[in-house]
Image 1 (cartoon, one colour):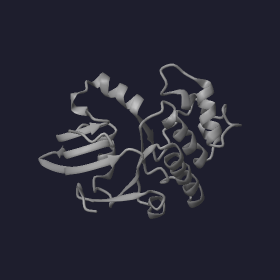
Image 2: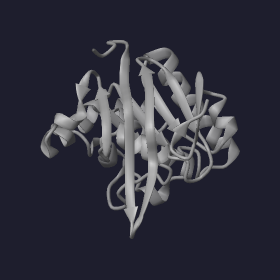
Image 3: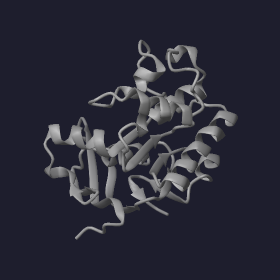
Length: 221
C-alpha cells in the first residue's frame, strides 16, 4: 500500500552500473518517502548517488532492483511511451546548465514541453519570473540567472506534481543563486509545488525544509 501523502516512494531501490568487471552500487537499497508539498535538498560528496537518485525519481533511469512509486504508480510497469508521458505530465526538470535550446526564443523554450502550445500561459509564467520584456530573446542574450528562471518556467508549464532540480545554482554567482532559491521556495510555500534539489551548496540547502545526506549510495541522515 502506498501513502497518498507521498509523491515519491523508494522501496529498497538499487541501481547498479557495470564498468568492465566492476559493479558500482550507485544506489544501495534506498528507502525514502517524499511528502506532497515538501521542499527537500539532497547533499553528499561526488559519487554518493545524489544525481542517480534524482534520475530514478524522474524516470530518466530505472532501478536495477526495488520499486519506485510516483503518485502511487509503480514506474516499473510503465512502457517507454508511458514513461515519457508520465514525465511530461507529472515532473518538471531544472538543470545546472539550463538545457535551453539556443535557436529558440525564451517563449519558445518554455512552450517546448507542451503538446498543445499555450503562449498566454507561457507568458504568464515568464512574467512571474520577472522576464516579461524578454519573450523574444535567445538564451545567449540572457544572463545565467535569467536562463535559469526560463528553465523554471519551462519546468512549470505542464503543472507538474513534482519539480526535480539538479544543482540549480551550480552555474550561478551567489546573488543569482539566492534569487533562484527564493523563487523555488516561493513556489513551494505559496503554490504547494513539491520540489527536490540536488546541491553541493549548503546555502542553497538552507532554503529547503529538509536535507537528506547521502554517501556511497546510501541515505545516512
